[in-house]
Length: 439
Image 1 (tube, rainbow, N blue to C red):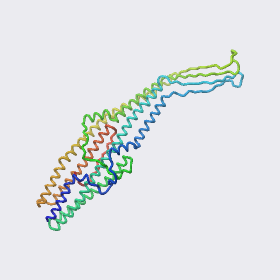
Image 2 (cartoon, rainbow, N blue to C red):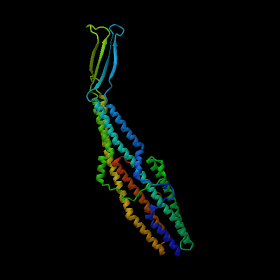
Image 3 (spheres, rainbow, N blue to C red):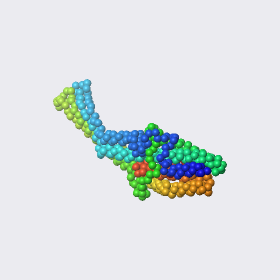
Image 4 (spheres, helix red, strand yellow):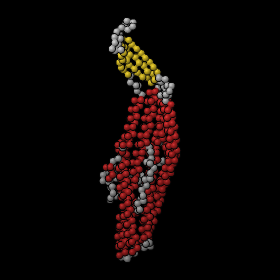
């Protein structure tokens, strides 16, 4: 009896130290760390350096710069020869050069329009950078929470097996009833199912992290980080104001408005006429009517008259595109304001909930577990009460892990809205694993 009670005390002591040891234990299965754990800053730098989205955005900027250079170039001159009456004694022949000169700043307007597009693409590259980083960080915290859940549930599963063995020993000596044995076996089964589900979630999280990083080789590596770390301080008013004024999404939309303005100016410059200059030198085979012989210079000049084609359709289309860009900017500002307020509300909810779990609920659940244990040692409580208290502690720990994951997901989305696009607003919360955990 005394020896069995000491075994119970040992099992319970292992559960009580679970909060401090769970994060240091290694998962026995799933994508366990086989090499040096991954660091988020290193992985993010490498991902941004090789991601196809960044390569595409950079190439689009280079292509636009090339178009801007081309748009400012003058038309090439036309050089040729001409002849007249070549089969007679009065044959004339010569050379000429012809140059078309755009007037009214047409070339400058065309170049400025493409440079405005370069500015928009540069702002959009920052948006793409933020979107890639957001997806990577979200996958990172998913993997971190999945690893933590594996560590906790692995310990719970092992303790549950030990509890079954101890309860059976107590039953054999008459210190426990058959329902106690059944309860312990049910609890062990629940722990095994929860651990299996957590391993599946970890495998999925590892694959998503590898896909977000664009490197399948990291799928077997563990994420190195602390889910309990203090999140950054994000004051509501200042954060939302920065999102509405300096988010790359807003900057990209504003650059699109400026590009539309530049295209309107370019369309209006196309109304300007073009000057055509032509000069040359000719020679007549015999004498001319004055009895002279030799080379004779010639010069012609002309200008187009914008009478019928004043680019009316082009100007109308450019003005319509300008209105579209301005409306899109206003729509984005409204949507971004609503999204920022909702995300910040989610951030505050998760922050307060995780703090409440960490500083109050988990402490109280652990204290209740200790009290039931003390009463059980004094034979004043039944073993199922100890199991219920243990289950409550583990369930609260699972809820805390979910809240911590929600907290970091909200932090990622807010930081991304300050430096890029959120990752499609999809939920990153994993389904409940069905078991408890330790804090």
